[in-house]
Amino acid sequence: MAFPLKITLVTACLLLAACRSDPIQFHTLTPAQLSGTARGNGGEIQIESLSVPAQVDRPQIVIRQGNSGVAILETQWWAASLVDELRSALVDQLANSSPQRRVSVRLDVQRFDSIPGQYGLIDVKWRLRNPGEGDSTLITCRSTLQTPSGPSIDDLVVAQQNNVKRLAALISQAATTAQRGCPSAN
Figure 1 (cartoon, rainbow, N blue to C red):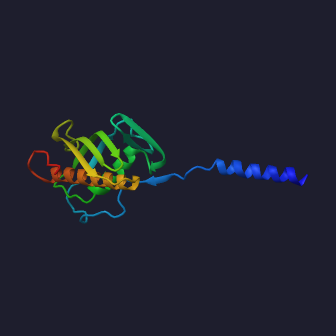
Figure 2: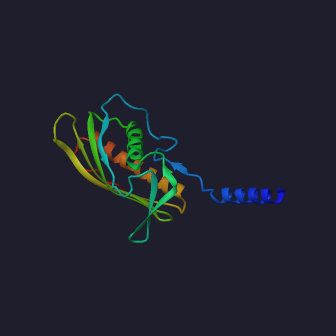
Figure 3: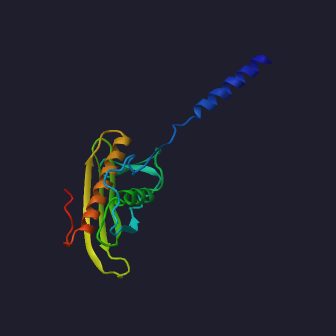
């Protein structure tokens, strides 16, 4: 009787070990330390709306593979959906800006590409306007920001954090200057 019990226990242990999966790692677009100055007493920049392509708006990180493929990484997740991560990161970055007036921004992300060992890219159409003035647009811009990335997912996330920081700086610059033009993404 002891021998079949040992075989049963060993088999059960092997089956449980075979069912083990890699742990999920969570990432955020909000950097651990914000750079910038303290918030001023001027206006503020409010995010009116934000959209991202449906292919990447999910909790799992999506990377490009080759010219036409994508991979959904089942063990590498955003802390929230991508649209919520972007909104949170932009709110944090824009909190350091001090525009002369209240403005709102609408953002429509055209591309959010992550390619390990190459780059993170964000291509965004955005529109600044004064709240409460209907569709009276101050400016409409398109910014394409690309940051080199190392081979790891952590490297890609840092590259995308840098892109979000640069995007927030462009929006802040447009909101604080009197000229009506899109700032350069250089």
